[in-house]
Length: 115
Length: 113
View (tube, chains in turn yellow, purple):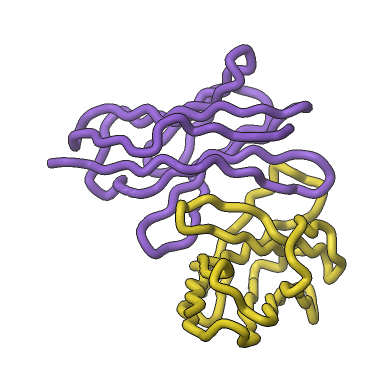
């Protein structure tokens, strides 16, 4: 069974569109994250949620809105897509918050291409 | 400011040769240090982590890393590289109440026959 899954794996869309990426973890973890990996492979955290509560919001444009319907899911909705949003988006989860040594388990990534 | 530096963008080694990937960090408190590997088109897999205790940590796939506080380093090593080790390697530092990971820019490892 896949521990952290994301859908879709690839997403190609036009500028100005609105799109969502879904993430689910079946590890029973309390904390979930979204990371963005740019074209130079640089990985940067965007958001984290702990048990449906927003913990980290790293100066991300408000066109990006995470939504956590329950602690096993953290979806990322992006409004008015721009060319610069093209990247690979990774979801991750860890057992709990405040335990920095906890391993973060990553999903396979969603490659978003904005044309 | 918290940061991670991986000085080598790209390294090529011969299969069977030893490997050392460098990682330096800047962190105000006790760092928690991680090495992740990303194979082409894949997500990140944890190789090993350090948070306390023995400064030499063993990981999966025959990798190890040594934490040197005096040098602010956490270099990754493997005594004999296999062709399947070709991938991108990321060093990361975490800590604090939010469990936020800060990644280095990665080192791309190529393995030649």
